[in-house]
Amino acid sequence: MDQNISSRDGTALAHESAGRGATIVLVSGAMSTGATVAPLAAPLSERFRVVVYDRRGRGASGDTPPYTVEREVEDLAALIEATGGEAALYGVSSGGALALRAAASGLPVRQVAVYETPYALSEEHLAERARYTERLTAALEEGRRGDAVELFLQLTGLDDAVIGSARQSPMWAGMEALAPSLAYDDAVMGGGGVPREMLASIEVPVLSIAGDASPAWMRQAAKAIAESVPRGAYRTLEGQTHMAEPDVLAPVLAEFFAR
Image (cartoon, rainbow, N blue to C red):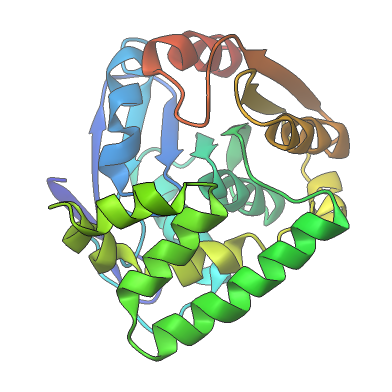
């Protein structure tokens, strides 16, 4: 990231942009930085100005306690103001929840696309999220960053053996560095359930996407988003999982954002 702007509370936000045209801001999810969504920037920048940024508390961006979701919305407001005054938003996973919250808050957002925002629909799933929040909070308060990362990986469904192997890998230190931001994504998810009242207040077009190779509950959550917003659409991508291939996803986003 080669540029910085300041959010309302003074937090430095690292970002970069590519291309020309209407602005699209890409919002990453948990355990990720702007680099995670950057591969989408190249194909989209052929038709749009694409902004990639590190959310607060990760990558090259700063952080200012105490954390609130409203501050992350203010971060997006600052980015939009600095890059043209209006933007479309694309958010992946919990980044989608942040993008939707930003649109509902009245930011100058013209469209929102989200990919597999992991809202829970069943009571069992909601209870699992509540247990995760409790255990994550305790791990971070006690400085057990590795345990916090492990809790998140377990929530995503990774096998314990795979997690154990990851703990021994060179990438684990980087994951532990991002661990405090897991609490931020947990807050953005707001308890985990579909925030139907908030979604109903979004006036701009929303495209909710899921991969047809992802778990059924992911597709159900994506469909629930589309059904909860006044101007929603739902689409699946053939053969895609939670880690969608940029060359499959980008044309779908480009078609939507060009409307």
